[in-house]
Length: 426
Ligand code: ADP
Image (cartoon, rainbow, N blue to C red; front, side, top):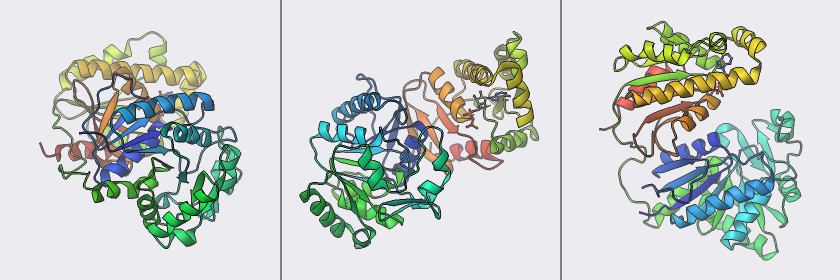
């Protein structure tokens, strides 16, 4: 079975977001981490999302990585390519949205594409080309002072024009509201007038569905994860998206369970406290580790007799004053890297001892764990809480992984996660 939709996402969490949207609309989806190697096996999936870290690297590097991903996705059979960026259009006058999109267009031999980062559910809407975050313009939102990509111009037509060779036009809400054929006509008029790029207004989910329908024949579509709302239906309409059961079904995965927490966000603190009230938690002491104590061995000795019972919980999560104290002694970066390294080592050893179901709290922590485990891709499964699905790793052994960054999830997240997993049909 060939891949239908191939996507290139410019960061990891954005890629997961996109996968979630596609799975919920019925496409079996796999996320590949850090770009596929030429030898990466084609997974059995309707959509493959390649997660790059290309949002803020130099444009030339972002182009090279994106073109490599494109080559693999085309070889895997992708009939349409989606370039996914942030719903706040995070970029600078140097790129990378315009330059990457134009490189992909050249490689695909197409002279026209659309740009629509709207995500109404998350408060991102576009009207007359102006991007709103909630009820304020992009330039009045927190994005104004983003450390890497400050967004001070709310007009996406102007923002994109400054980073593109081709001319940028607009498909206004007036056309979008009239549905797919009006949008198709607007695309045709722009193209005929010599425009290569269309910013497309969207203020509601059904706008995105209509835009998706109008772009069914585009070789390249670009947008936020919202633009994926209308795409699965295009494949279904053509009879290409089979009914192979629920798209979020994972292979049955059993084996001991563990929670590794390296996030100090408020939500995670409440989640770890919830577990502490219900049983023992192994706490990582970064200062002791820096002083030479083998915390990894201590944690494994603690966990070994507990494996197979309730999930073992190993946590570095600490309140702000404790984190500040640790950082004062070790420095922020050293403390962070050391705790990430310890949790990654523990993850590897736990898997060697048979652990197969793992919840990891913390975005950076999850990245370190996934890398230490040598995981190249994830099949996306059922959602635990908005934005956090269960996943199954590609390759052997198959692990069930839930990667939760920062402030996601309610206090009972860890236990709920395992009960959602046990509801998977075996
Ligand atoms: P989040 O998604 O909540 O931001 P991350 O894992 O991305 O979580 O970031 C948390 C960072 O804090 C990691 O680098 C982690 O190693 C570090 N860290 C975790 N616990 C401690 C601690 N007790 N003291 C100092 N740093 C810590």
